[in-house]
Image 1 (tube, protein in one colour):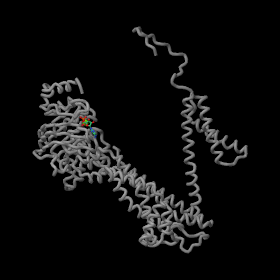
Image 2: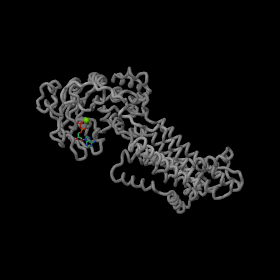
Image 3: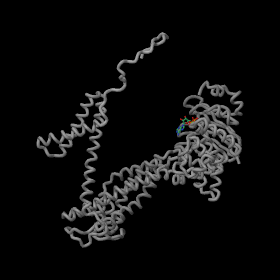
Image 4: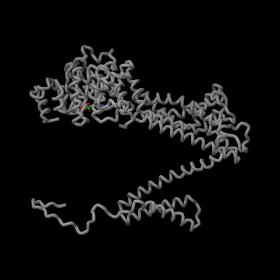
Length: 360
Length: 258
Ligand SMILES: Nc1ncnc2c1ncn2[C@@H]1O[C@H](COP(=O)(O)OP(=O)(O)O)[C@@H](O)[C@H]1O
Ligand SMILES: [Mg+2]
């Protein structure tokens, strides 16, 4: 746009004969990427078949490469270079997403299909007492009880402990002590579960304590505490300082401010963190092998005698190596995944229910 | 009920940084005192030393005396929690508790201090909301979350929350700076009513507001960039705005700097 420097009245310019917008340009239809995907998958499977390759991994990789190449080239031709680069970045993200999701979905699918064969009311309510490995009978009840009790005890121990530590670090801690605590929490996060198990085992040997669910739960608690501390810490840091100040300015003591204002505001996130920590320890096998010993029988007392647990049961059934025991292992794996999934759903539910309300 | 505040030789620090230096003044009971001055001259810092909120900031430290009717807030045997019950505060940005309903927000001070009778709670909440001119707008939704109100309503909710614990002094740090003109007017009217019962100190960036609501005005300024803020003068609001005794005050009020 050039304006005449002198103040002459501008003559209205006649409408240009081609009413083509200068901002719009040629563009591919919105569903074009879907078309690219179909074409590249067809090529990615067709060419190898013709060449006699049968590896599905090769098919997948070829399809992905075709997809990237086709979308880049076609977009360059139809649209322009900048759009093509944008399309390329988007396509790379989609391919990465698929690479990440495909194994996960396949794992879930296999577990559901194979686990569903044996999973029924009988399986959930019977133990392995007197069942031979090759028999199509028996169940997971004793292991389910074991997991629930051990994880329950570990949670009861580590949640108060972890919560208080996090409150200390965020609300009170400063100076060397806080730094030291943070350092130890970091170190504990990296402890392999077998080491936690060995630590408890050494205590058991020194004090000559028999294996029991409680000992396993102690090792699980060691693994759980740092996760709870870390996630709670992050959630507490998210609570705006203004709320603490508003409460303190009302003459509410600091400990009540933390209890009644800070923790309720963060409770949704804290619950999610705790649930994720539970999900993590529910799948631990090593400490159970060392400390709980494993059992075929129902033992509802976690404080005395050997117990089983879901991950231990899966391991044990797999080792038997019979068709029937493989079925039981898959079914138990499905039970474990369902357990973790349910915990996750519960956590999300609580987080949504407890989240600070904004509605009018 | 309302108390006089006598400040003498007050300095406040953030770690090693001295934010305000050697402030002495008197805040009269049952009146509104306005603090004006350029940004960063320490008005908020000074305000927060008056209810011992300054020490909540990491590194916050205070020297000097603040007498509340002859009792020094900074005596070693004084509990800051008790001070804050006597000297309430309203912040710049409305900050209702997000997990609580409107009712619970107003009741929070009493409930969390543990010093109330169930029967009186309803009355206190209604009285405080009426006192903050909010009752008619929220009486049908007391159980709805406080964060669902408009900004101006939220700020009045915070005022209701502050007066529910029956303080004797009310400190307000730019209470209208996040609000529209109508809400601002509502809060200014409210301040006029509240000064019958409380000693009020208000920080404001708005000269007209200071002139409208306050009885006395204190002007703060920085000696130079990086130097601590100081009290330049305090006087009747009319005099400060018509005939201040210091040139810097006149320059600031007439918009020549700041
Ligand atoms: N939390 C803090 N930590 C360190 N310095 C601060 C903090 N808050 C304010 N200050 C400093 O104190 C001085 C006064 O700030 P403030 O009281 O907020 O001024 P005002 O409210 O008049 O704008 C400024 O120099 C500011 O940088
Ligand atoms: Mg300020």
